[in-house]
Picture 1 (tube, rainbow, N blue to C red):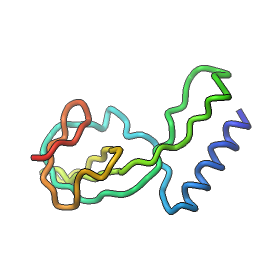
Picture 2: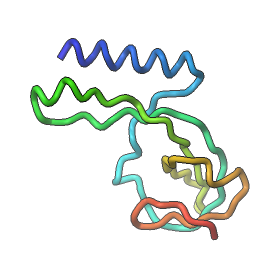
Picture 3: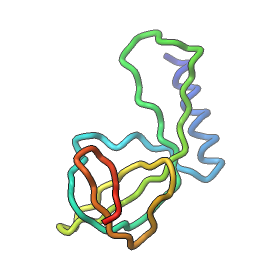
Amino acid sequence: MRLTSIVLVLAASSAFAAGEKVVTPVPAKQVRPGYGVVESVTPVRVAPARSAAAGGSAAKEERARPMYRVAVRMPDGSVQYRDLDRPEFKVGDNVLLTNAGDIVPD
């Protein structure tokens, strides 16, 4: 357990050195469908979800993946976030957030 903590701290510090924030994946309960406007697109590193399995494969260290966190302002004023592999959208784009958690052009 201690080794895992050290590895995560080192991965986070290398991402900070590269100027990217390390974030956790967007929880599924925060995903709501609807239309909105892209408010920001930020390069981040998404930390892998922690496994509940004790003593999993230590040889397969998963590292934080480079992604883009997209903030979408909804008509009710709330903001929703999605993580994308590539920067497909720019600030001001009208988009649709789907039930599956995807972002598509409006």
